[in-house]
Image (tube, rainbow, N blue to C red; front, side, top):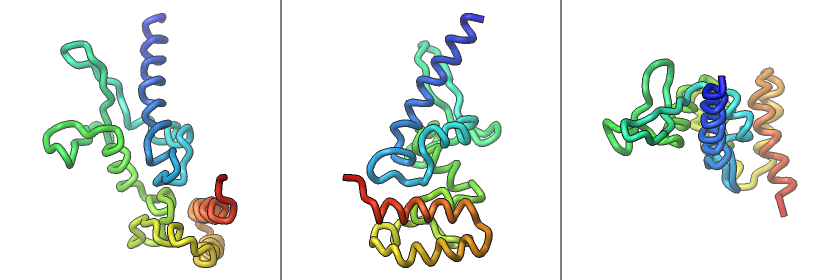
Length: 153
């Protein structure tokens, strides 16, 4: 029982730290609309702590039972941010998760409107998302609009 609690604590510390420091969920130019704790609650199931032969611990990313491999280092396991990118790319609501995502399958999740500061375009997209009943996209766009209208000082 004590060992199980320690294992859970190690998992929480290692994986929570990755979510908290990932540029996908934190920092000035975070790539998604998700806060680290929400992202971890939803995507944390894709990560496992693994122990190497030398006793060192690492985080492995999985989609189902398939290990996520690095595109930058073929044949090697992907690092945390490569895993998150792969997981989000395969998510059906990818465009709603990415900052500046555009509705529809061709959205690509770019940051053009948010970076240009064109709040009027974002407001039109928000109205369209509400009209279409796409609540997650509407929330995402509303967050972007708020960030542009009320920049952090």
